[in-house]
Amino acid sequence: MASMPQSVPSLRERVSEEEWAVREDLAAAYRLVALYGWDDLIFTHLSARIPGPDHHFLINPYTHMFEEITASSLVKIDVEGRKVDDTPAPVNAAGFTIHSAVHMSRGDAMAVLHLHTPHGQAVSAMKDGLLPHTQSAMIAHHDVAYHDYEGIATNLEERERLVADLGTKNSMLLRNHGTLTLGSSVAQGFMRMYFLERACEAQVMMLTAGRDGLNEPPAGVADVVRDQVSGTEMAMAVEKLAWPALRRKLDRIDPSYKQ
Image 1 (tube, rainbow, N blue to C red):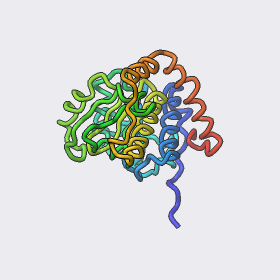
Image 2 (cartoon, one colour):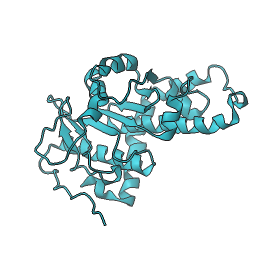
Image 3 (tube, rainbow, N blue to C red):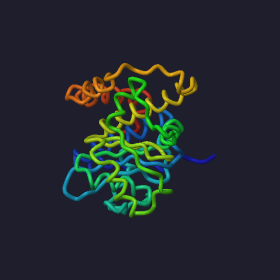
């Protein structure tokens, strides 16, 4: 029987408090992605910037399922995806191509999440993209950009085009590929992904009725929802209410992500 990846010695006493806090949050996000069934084996990535002037980031070791990620197992890399610390854990530098583009072009992109869920891929392949027909979609719709598929993201030249398409938006449908969100914190990036993925799942289900069978929401209501979720109250609800609740959920299931 195959064994779990070898445990990594705790880094808690070897890194700053600020870095450790980011490590715990990012490890929690990996575990939550697995918990919600959004993972894709060891593929796709969630990344987070470490506070400070060095432009260092955290990403998953390319050997672990998302349910195995811990705060100490996350690998510190530079903007080119090269390992900063001496660790045997491999990383997928090519997988950081998309993330590095967003991190370096957007000072507010402290966390970048990219997924390949079936629902996200399905909506990314739909001509009309995300439809503002459900509450979840209305929460996400106004903040979604689109980027055409160019193949597996190993071409560094694609970064400029991706950044141009993203603009000032905080979520993106990578056409025929998947979903992407960013945030000024791991919590914010995760909650944007939650609403985007929830909206995509609902859209795939509602389209079983056919486009002609959909109830069109009243004119202007999507703008009302946009304004309702764009203020400080929503941001506070994410950071102070929803994210701590999600962390407590993980603590009850398996607190080892904090190791």
